[in-house]
Image (cartoon, rainbow, N blue to C red; front, side, top):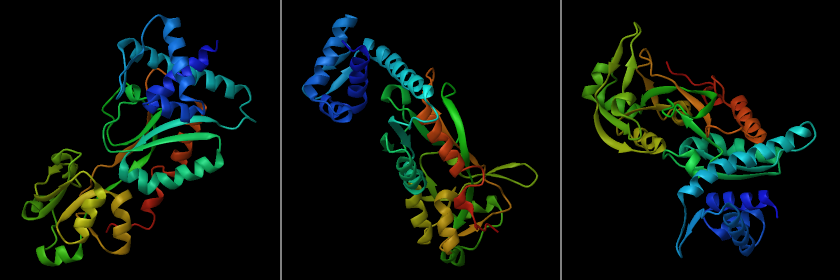
Amino acid sequence: MDKFADIEAFTAVVEAGTFSAAGERLGIAKSVISRRISQLERRLGSRLLHRTTRQLALTDSGKNFYQRAVQILAELDDAEQSVTKETLELRGSLKLAAPLTFGLMHMSNAIAEFLTIHPAIVLNLDLNDRNINLVEEGFDMAVRIGELEDSTLVSKRLGTSHNVTCASQSYLDTHGEPTHPDELHQHIGLQYSNIPYKQQWRYEAPGGKTIHAQPHIRVRANNGESLAAAACAGLGITTGPTFILGSYIKEGSLMTILNEYQRTSAGIYAVYPPGRLIPRRIQVFSDFLAERYGDNPYWDDDLRTS
């Protein structure tokens, strides 16, 4: 009886969502997965999963056991790899969550390169702007940009995201260019709805004073690319990260404004579930991203904001 195989089957079912998907992930039949889960429940004397015809759900015992199980498997895997650290290739699964636009624009190529270097890594990637619960959803790591609200998470800083304010030349020709944040109340704003209004339109004056601007919002969207497209079409002024807006500024579709009034930069972080050993493959991947981004990221190269 292989206890670790039973535990691995259980965590795969939780993370994949079905017995069939777990079997595909582990390369074994659905019936084997079912048998291993049943063996595990008999041995523990407790039901771990509620099974219905439509879905699986963790019992309270299952939730507690899952949190311990993923930690046990991570520690076992890391122990095995540390024995022959210099010669053994990275292997195992990596379940990763990242913001949609940042993931598409600045992680896809990095991930492809990492997987090419480490062919034994299996990736499960979720690109989504929702707030992921790493523990409940079984993620090994998430990339987050901005202030980290959950202080229990373990984090590593990967780089810095700089913010700018910009508009198209056609908008500025029609409405004029504001020279002070207070003048934005006379202008049309394009609002990113995933952050508070005051946070998006907050500026720091040269003397250190904080200014909260109040443009008239015409477009609200939960995606920065949509707001950039609206700004390029002359629909208003937007503020946002240079990892989205930088390419439009470089090609001349958008012009930066209010450059004397700083927008607060945001950290780019790798975050991990608390209370677990971080497997070596995840540490190496985090270091790989940190080398790629940093405090002066490549997407800001040759970016003129004056």
